[in-house]
Amino acid sequence: MSLANWLGPQEWQAVALSLRVSLVATLASLPFATAIAWVLARRSFPGHGLLSGIVHLPLILPPVVTGYLLLITFGTQGPVGSLLKPLGIVFAFRWTGAALAAAIMAFPLMVRAIRLGFEAVDPKLEQAAATLGAPRVWIFATVTLPLMMPAILAGATLGFAKAMGEFGATITFVSNIPGQTQTLPSAIYAFLETPGGEGPALRLVLVSVVVAMGAVLLSEVLARRAAQRI
Amino acid sequence: MSLSVAFRHGFPGLDLDVAFEAPVGVTALFGPSGCGKSTTINAIAGLLRPDSGRIALDGRVLFDGRTNLAPQERRIGYVFQDARLFPHLTVERNLRYPARWRRGAGRDFDRIVEMLALGPLLQRRPATLSGGEKQRTAIGRALLSDPALLVMDEPLAALDDSRKAEIMPWLERLRDEVRLPILYVSHSVPEVLRLATTLVLMQRGRVTHSGPLETILADPRLAPELGAREAGALIHATVEGHEPDGMLRVRTAAGPMLLQEVEAATGQELRLRVLAHEVILSRDPPQGLSALNVLPATVVQVSGGLVQLTLGDQRMLAQVTPRSVETLGLTPGAACFAIVKSVSVLPS
Image (tube, rainbow over all chains, first blue to last red; front, top):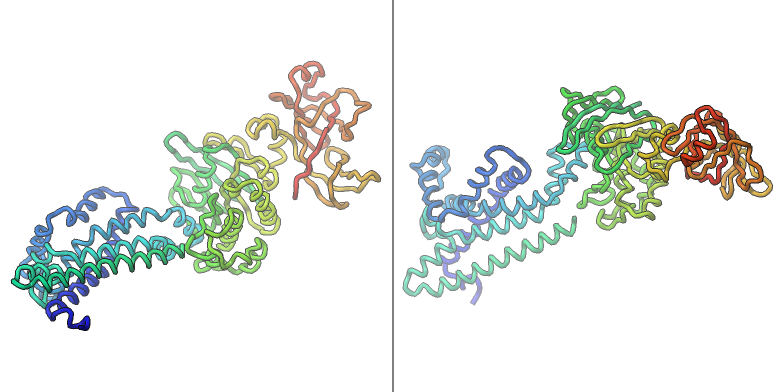
């Protein structure tokens, strides 16, 4: 039995969709997470605590609440959703919505990991670069970013893993439509609700474990390689 | 070429009010830890914005309250105590880092690499360098940023004695070969003696005195700031020739002197250190002494157990007890003889 037909078509769809959703969610939110982490680590301003609180909200709120808030904001009738609809950007009940939900849920974890990276880079090195004539943007690109690459990789992996496992907010926001919005956890949930679905569910559980372990191992390797260069 | 500094800055527990001029050469900023030396050079380099004041380099205003140039625009090469090499870049890429942003920077790459003997290190990473190699790289990187002024914040403080001895000749070479004013922060008298031409003394956020090194060293009132063991004059000497018994005959402003166990060629310039506790005073011409260097002198002033003497144009210090001052009548203008027990030659 080959790997291709070890999984049924619906199971394959769920796995492929989940990988796409998680990858898009991670890559699209990484720049924002880095920017917010920089602001939180390096800037002091009134409202610093409030910003930190808002960023961490998805970690604390029940996922169902986050999903519902996304639905009433980004739904086709919602204040943001109705603005984006004429532009052809629709989130509700689409895979893009699943990616948005996954990104929002993974965001605090990514920010936390990357923020630790910023705090570990010695600002004295950036000062030294300034005395050598380098503009601030260049210092960021050539000194700060390379030195915190392990933290960015850790943040991305954590975010990817969280996105792969996201369930509550996703199912609330974009429902559980096979081939459209049925991610891996949603598919496991659906199979467990169906008589005789234990087999497919167990196979998807195995896939989840393998993907999660693979992501962690890959990030370990990349982080070690990045750290060796330092 | 000169640096002109005058600024005030308040810290919790320390108010700085610093003013001095640094002419061409090596100006040493000397004082105990916590007196504000590092804050002062950070203000000069633009890493700290003072509350008020004016800092100008060669007439170019770096800071005056309205103007506040960024560190990038000041053209001040900074050698930090902890080197601050970029850990993810090789020595070569550290050295070439400034080249992109400073016109003329990097032009002297080969010359500076050769001067500091960095060639064998170019492909190494900072983590694999010794403390001395790191500092040499940091000095090279600062020089390659095409600076108008080089500031060095205790570049030897983090090194052990043998590493210090390894780096010192490079700093002297720097002073003698690179036509660049240098501001050197230190709390070590031996370093200052070997490198500095001008001395700025700081205490508790204030500049107490500043001037040429020789003048400051021969001022008995400033001896406590430099440390009692280090009190004593610095004398310039020219080698005249060798005696048949191997001793070296030198000419100084204080008169002829004889030196023992010194390797030097005729005509060579030497810097002699005569410590105050190596000088004995006598009112009468001494006879039957083993000391070879006996010089006629006149008392200028007496302060805190130190007598300042003038010998021709040369000032010198002698350490005496209050009782000797009393019994010998060592008052300003008194004629006496300075018996120099030993002289050390500073490497140059």
